[in-house]
Image (tube, rainbow, N blue to C red; front, side, top):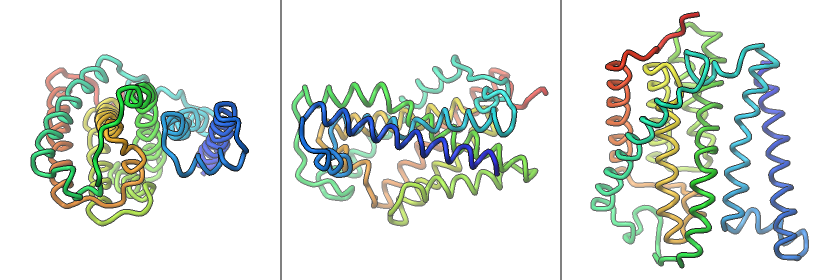
Amino acid sequence: MLGLAIFGATFAVLTIGVTVAFIVADLIRTGGPVEASIDRFGSEMDPLSLLATNLGLAVAIPAVVLAMVVAHRMRPGWLSSVVGRLRWGLLLRMSVLALTMVVLFTIVGSWLIPVDDGALGIEDIQVVSLSTWLGFAVVIVLTTPLQAAAEEYAFRGYGMQALGALVRTPWVGAIVTSLAFALAHGTQNWPLFLDRLAFGLIACWLVVRTGGLEAAIAMHVMNNVVVFLISAAFDEVGDTLQVSAIPWIAVIIDVAQMAVFALLADRYVRRRGLATRSAA
C-alpha cells in the first residue's frame, strides 16, 4: 500500500507540474490571458498540447522508480526484466518486429475499414500541411515512446509485481491490471473496452513469457507512434486521443495483430535462450 501511495502522490504532483509548465509556455507563446491558456489545454490539440499530454503520462516512470526504491527498497532495474535491467538489444529487435506487424495490419485494416465511412468516428477527412504534420511528428517520435513505456512500467511492471507479491499466480495481477488499464481510458463502447483489455492481457502474457517489459513496450510504442503519425496527417490527433467507440471488425484486426506479434516475440526469445525467470 505504501508503494501505491508513493506512486500515486508522485504521479499527481509531477502531472500537475507538467500542466503548469504547459500553461506557462502557452502564455509565453500567445501572450493571452491565463484563462484562455487553461481552456486551450483541455479543448485544443496542437503539438504543444500533445507534448504536455505525453509528458503528463511519462512521469509515471519516475513515480514507479521512486515507489520501488522507497517503499520496496529494490533496485528499479527489476521493473524492466528478470536480469535487473532493460535489455536494449531485445527492445530494438522487438520494436522492428512490432513496427512490421503494425504496418501490415494497418494496411489490412485500411482495406476492411475505410477511414472515410465514419466507422471509426472520423468524418470530413482533410490532409494537413507538411509543416503542421512535421510539428506533430517531432513530438510523436520523441515523446510518444516515453508515454507508452510509462504505461507499461506502471501497469505491467509495477502493478503486476505489486500484486504478484500478494498472490502466487501472476494471472491475478494480469487480470486486475488489464482491467485497470482498460478502464483508465475513460468512456468507451464495448468493442473498444475489450480491445484495450485484450491489449493489457496480451502485454501481461508477453511479460511473463519473455521475462521483461521489452516486447510489451515495443508493441505499445509502435502501435501508438504509427496511429498518431497517421492521425496527425489528417488533423485527427485530438479525436484519436478521445476516441470512445470502434467497430467490432477493428477489434478483430487489432487483436489478431497483437496475437501474431506476441507469438513471434515469444518464439524469438525461446529460440535465443534468453532468460525468462530471475536467477535470484
